[in-house]
Image 1 (cartoon, protein in one colour):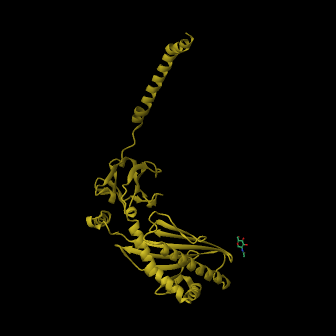
Image 2 (cartoon, protein in one colour):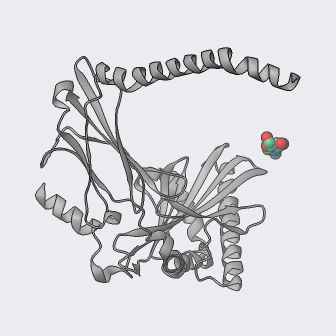
Image 3 (cartoon, rainbow, N blue to C red):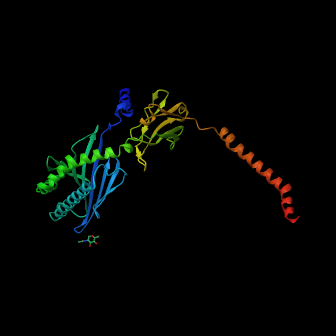
Length: 340
Ligand SMILES: *[C@@H]1O[C@H](CO)[C@@H](O)[C@H](O)[C@H]1NC(C)=O
């Protein structure tokens, strides 16, 4: 456990000279989803992603990429962009026509969906050769490796036949190979460079505590909310002093619309054992300083009474007194004044 923590800290806390390099693995992926309704009606949807952040959209009507981030263009020139759009468009047209042809061979049946995924990774600023896969109705069908398409084990005879068809065109496979070995890594490194300030920004988490739905009589569900932080890696734990609480349940790290993240950690405890618990947050934006939130017993009814009811009664008394004063002193004056 301690080893894990040290490992995590090493990941979380950037060391001085690492400013330039992205430490973690970052992947860039292009996904093209085509829905086939009938022989004359298909719908294309393309998008590009840097890990979980969408950088581009693609509409098949114009065939142009839509840049979703101010830095989505990366270091691509206008001519290069046009060329890529053309390659992308031609490739999608070819894929679509092959798929349509397969309906007549009874390999595919309308309506169906085909997804093409092209992806590559960068690790420590070095980009790797990518991979390309095609799925039919959400299941792996085939993948591209060393210049040709290979059926996936679960693809059956359908995958074998379609691979054969795709592999008939050497030129198309050469284009695919080039996309994987050159274009994808080049785009990825360009994006990482152009979007560096945004991707490496440090945003401090906000944190607060609450109770969730009661797990049972005499029990409390304590919830520690950690919100609006960036980057994504974060370590959050319910503690009693130095002791990690093993029953802590980690939620999913969820995205906010602005690209920051949200996480909640909950702990089911006996109500009378809640005192003395705290939530500990470690994040790279905190500069090595942990954030600690202490659980406080909800105030007893007596305190609520003192804090809320007493001022209310005092206010009501004041209002009543003012109203009386107004009635007895002020109103006759107010009425009389204009008449004089
Ligand atoms: C394909 O589907 C569209 C929309 O449902 C329809 O208008 C069109 O007539 C269909 N075409 C054929 C050839 O079935």
